[in-house]
Length: 227
Image 1 (cartoon, rainbow, N blue to C red):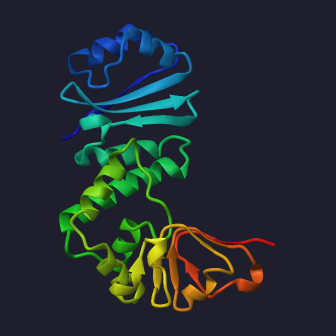
Image 2: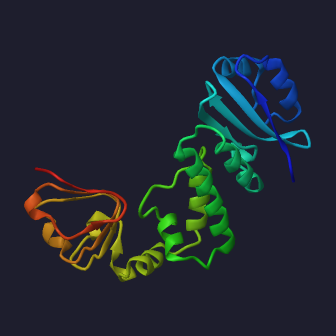
Image 3: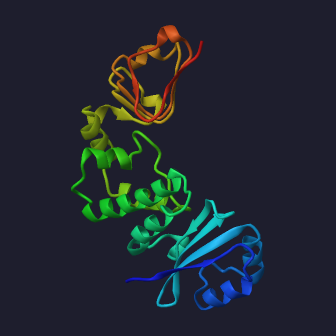
């Protein structure tokens, strides 16, 4: 459903904004709250049939400083994600904000497909290469919802071509059969011999002696080696 963006420039009267949203004020903003925001921010609100669904704070007309949806806990409703993404591209917006919208779009798509996921989808879900970020807690909540229905070890085994039986996130279970460790891992002279078969660490890996460095791939982060 097509809507319209209404802008309220820095210094606008907060009562004007309050009157626009007061009947549907999920954000629970008072006139005082709006006054404090409008001292240094422009506000853009997306209305559909006079009901607000999105809000953007723009600091000094240059930088996006906040994005809010109108769903539960200010989450962004799926049907308005494309509109939000289009609007954000009009501003001098850092790639992080656009990336958050793209993350949500992808999560909604993955949740619909559920069982027909590609390796790229699995890399995304398990944050193999980069952390998945979003607005408020909605990305984390959706990630947890999707992952709760999946077999983590089977997914990781498929993705990294290792045995699901040889994956662990428990340091006490680390042994010569372990191929993949999930979590942050410190290796030293006492446990270096336990990782003779370790190929992947999904997390940080710290090796306290460069002479002990093993051919292990830290899938998400750098391998840190001390001097």
